[in-house]
Length: 267
Ligand SMILES: C[S@@+](CC[C@H](N)C(=O)[O-])C[C@H]1O[C@@H](n2cnc3c(N)ncnc32)[C@H](O)[C@@H]1O
Image (tube, rainbow, N blue to C red):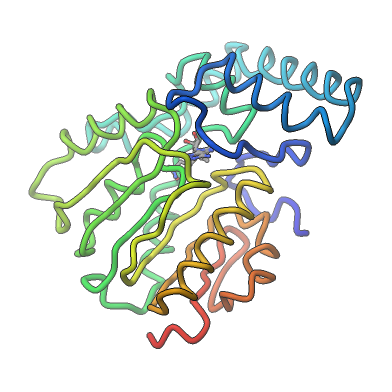
């Protein structure tokens, strides 16, 4: 498994294996802690699990220090330019804590996102764009400047998803070449991929077991209904999971991202 290959910096937390579903709809700190504990304790035992939880608590305290908060404002240029809110700097402590148990919110660097989308040799108009773990929706806004058929974001934190919806409303219509944009509040591991040609974007959205599940669901959907599918994977720490799924071949990439194309997709 490849480790840090890039400058963009969502840190992997190998001890996390990922939630399996949204319990009773809304994730809360208590429900997420319970789910995390229930998942880890049987595998790692009481003491190792408690130690890991303490380490997460320590990371949360470090992450709450003023210097870290200041660092997070480093991603704010896109917001100033477009009058939206996609920064990780003003995320509530609840969302940050739940993020540490799953995968922390960080918006994709805008120039990198553009580079990745431009690397696809496709007619965007035939494809639906999907962001798995869409956060505050920066990729949804940026994708709307391309003529995709439609755009779907999947995010499990209501706070982030509500901001994404607000951003979609605020983003000027004149910039949108695709106007059908949906920010869906859902757990990505249970997401049913629509049966149409897809460009799927993932930027370290889930811990390992959750990511495995998303890829398995995607490959099963592609087998049921073969169609052109491209997968853009930023910070591709779990690239091997995609390659071993048997559904994709790698077509391009840099230190910061990998592009995969569905096998036998016919595009
Ligand atoms: C690194 S951020 C990327 C945000 C966005 N895709 C971007 O590039 O700007 C990962 C996002 O995945 C979300 N996430 C984590 N687990 C999830 C799950 N099971 N279902 C849906 N979203 C999830 C997090 O809340 C976070 O917003």
